[in-house]
Image (cartoon, rainbow, N blue to C red; front, side, top):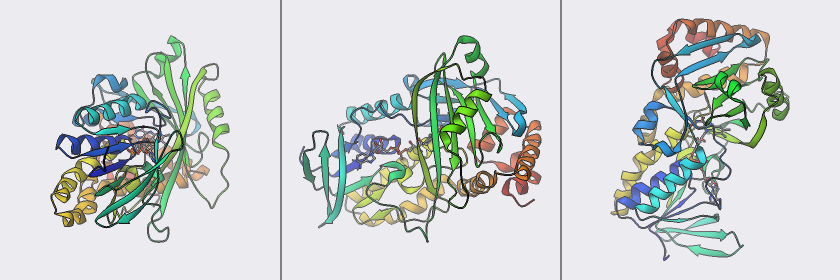
Length: 394
Ligand SMILES: Cc1cc2nc3c(=O)[nH]c(=O)nc-3n(C[C@H](O)[C@H](O)[C@H](O)COP(=O)(O)OP(=O)(O)OC[C@H]3O[C@@H](n4cnc5c(N)ncnc54)[C@H](O)[C@@H]3O)c2cc1C
């Protein structure tokens, strides 16, 4: 291929969605990913609310399981259940999602190149000069007019923002895919289960999600706290597996990764011809370690601006950060601050007691209210009285 107008680095949800949007508008676009196969390294738990599945038109082929309830196990193991009479959300097959998005982009005319890594870039005249390396070690230079960093939290081209001005809050997630028998499967199917409390996971949380018949996702996520010693995640996950009676299950896959976002989202989104997208500009939310739908939203915001820039109106891109902030909404930032307070502070008996009170306060909610709280960040729905507890003010 000759030099594309737009080179998108990273075929995650953000990059592959942008490639589709640009290609269907007739733009020559190249989408690359360092993975040789997008089904590999499917690190994400990929739980979404049903509204996001519908809004983004995700097909049946990427849905691994549906869920219609919540189960929260609090400090000491107390279980609480909420169930709706309808589907509340889906757990996606993340590998299948990435394949579908990339195939859709290719069908619209984008060139998709796997096993291709962007090593570095520099500004070059009006555009960028980028060095790519393929799986055999061969290198080549490309000179696109616009370059998009959609490499997720790695920010392979943009780099991390200056730590003093835009500190990144970091969560580490580890997840195992477990093969279980029908009886165990029935215990965890149809709902998202979270384990909350410092006796489960200090400074984080655990989960069990259904993933196709007979397969469960067991995981933990913890915020990184340089100020305090933190036990190894592997040991915590094994402990969780034993405590939940899942120790006999065969482990089909082990994966994990980082979620890293700034809370205020004021970091630069552009450096000359280079634009950041998705997790690379902190769209992942740390409250539930969740970012697929926000990554897709960032592409919906950037695409029309980039199309205008390709027509010669490059100045319109200065509106991108503000438009993206508006799309994510003020609740997104509040929930990030909440996440930082809640998870980092969850390492003492006092914090467990506060959390237990909070969970008690949720009993009066419906399953829909809980979804609105956790996915739409509608904290006021379950009573503003509880908010100060969540924020750690009481
Ligand atoms: C353990 C865990 C569990 C999660 N669970 C959920 C969940 O339940 N629900 C949810 O919505 N979100 C979840 N997330 C977050 C979600 O997966 C991300 O927010 C989302 O994938 C971000 O999409 P993205 O396209 O911005 O980046 P990514 O999905 O990270 O995609 C970036 C792509 O860039 C490629 N790449 C990187 N560097 C280069 C390079 N130099 N050259 C070429 N290619 C490169 C990578 O191979 C990758 O495919 C979870 C994350 C983790 C770590």
